[in-house]
Length: 99
Image (cartoon, rainbow, N blue to C red; front, side, top):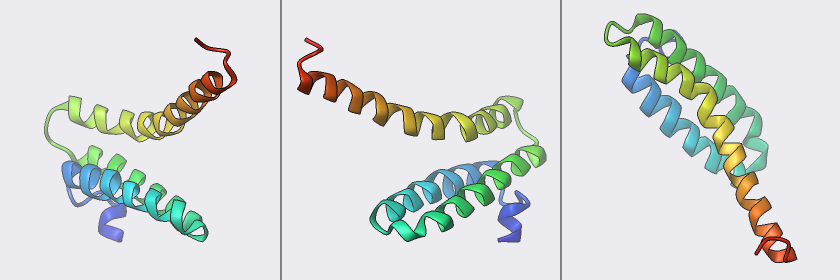
């Protein structure tokens, strides 16, 4: 866990394996087992810090470092907004407001 927190797995592995896949699995688990919500939040924080720190160690293109860091904020926001927008559109259709 310390290696993950310190970003020592490398940027690609930390972002794709630990952050993206790990948080996707954790999100699925927390929707089926709600009391895992605190564990899901802790996992999100640990992996986000790991990605940020892995970016600091990254020796490649600045583009990948920047994209990974922007994704830490953009993807969770989109993960909330897209379902809300779809729910709102479906509700408008059901109520007959949108045609």
